[in-house]
Image 1 (tube, one colour):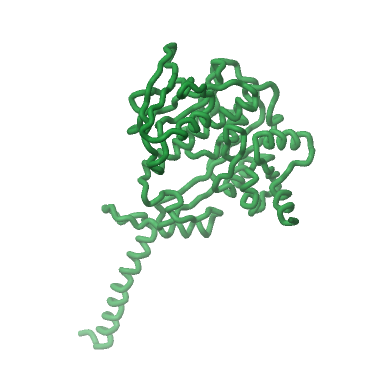
Image 2 (image 1 turned 30 degrees about the vertical axis):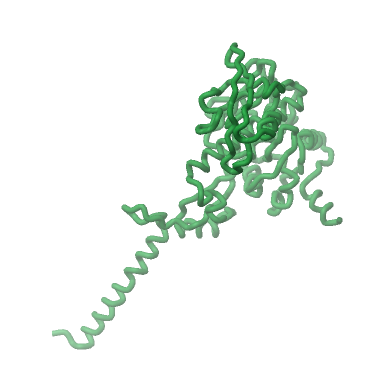
Length: 367
């Protein structure tokens, strides 16, 4: 027969054992993004951003040129011209988020910055793809303007539920809007938004060898009911019969614009635009060659470091963030235009002074 002391001791250890079960369950759940066998999410409301893969815009991916040119023989290139990306991780457990915060240089940002709460993942993905298509079009236009080559506008895709649906098809080449010739997307957008929702627009275009004319009643933008909308994703191509395509899958957003444009110029002009160097960069591009800021540049600089790049081309507006961490000997050039990027590569190759982000920041500090 057990003594009272023995019974009390056994009861105490039983209480402790049962008390540890909720703690153990909570610890286990901290490592899970959702409760097993349910749709109940345990993911933290943060996303982790870190260095993503780099793609050589002068090279190939999955056996195809990243920037593919048909209709003419591309000029030979050398070295690398990397576009950089940011890796985004979502649906993380508490333990995964803490681990990334403690053991990596990832940045934790509110999930709403990556997946807006009023939009589905599919809608965000569609917007990223649209931004990427617009980036390609702007890259083509900027490169053609730099090379003084005439351009033409074509339909990449008519958007569902817009006036363009059922009227235009991918590949249609737009010639004129209301009798005014069109040769770049910015001009076409200006002509459309100068109208009002409900106005009739006459569009001349070619489909294959056929010349066509269509009258379209303009709709209104989802973002602004007073803004006229036609509803097409537009591309730009040389008017000389040369065709340009980009063979990157699962990459979204507009930040590859400048590097696409530089690669296209290199492939369509004699000599090596990067002087055979290993160069990386990022930045949006406008049809007139203006380079705009992007997000996550600190991680893109780190991705370039990992790729053993010699020179990084950063939008001037991103300079403070670009050099906020030690770039470990990597030269980070400040560029505001396509010409700036070309000049930076030439100066670096010749051993001349490059206008760096640090110089830009120092000049601002002296004002």
